[in-house]
Length: 82
Image (cartoon, rainbow, N blue to C red; front, top):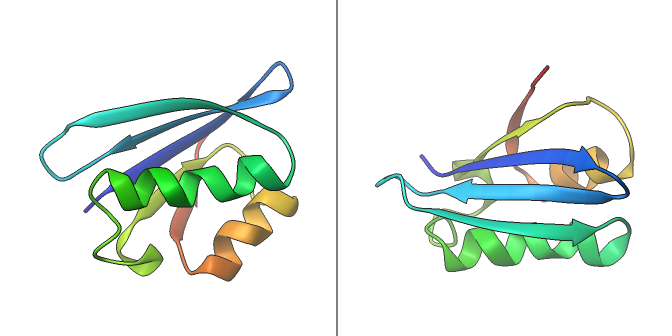
């Protein structure tokens, strides 16, 4: 199952995707709308697009906020990191 790791760092999001073979893609994304849209594009390009959001697990360090709400609304599976 494809994975997304999403962490905050100095006003941006560090996002990493891994497909089922373990190949990864990383990106440093801005906060705001652009930063919310780009993870969907990464997933689509790197192994999860054929599954749709319900087939992708997201690890993120918080359980609230606009970014989390956007991921939930899109149908991603998730869990809170630490």
